Image 1: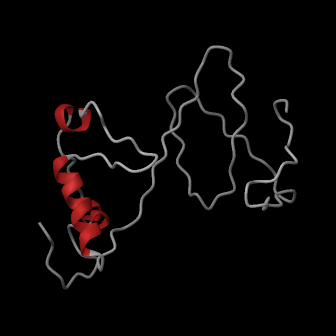
Image 2 (image 1 turned 120 degrees about the vertical axis):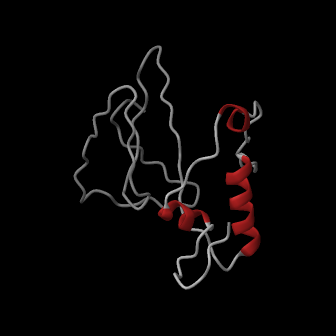
Length: 129
């Protein structure tokens, strides 16, 4: 498949979204730029046609703490306090421990405390510090 061609292959689950009614918008980015968008936005990438350059991506996912899930909330708070990197099947953590050794614990705003789970969204509850 050449640059700009649309594949007729289907995804693993057999579903391919019909995007023919949408007009694509090219977002021109320069080296060092950061693009943030909602995953609900129809999006995709073109093939990297650079001869000697790498395209890198950082996927960031954010969701408010689930206040009712105490073990998950406690893990999130501990991870933030101790600067622990997540380790799961496809996430390899921080083997060099740079997060722990080179950086300070992030300072959180009032919103940050709520997103993490330190403070409740319900204003009548006391924060968990």
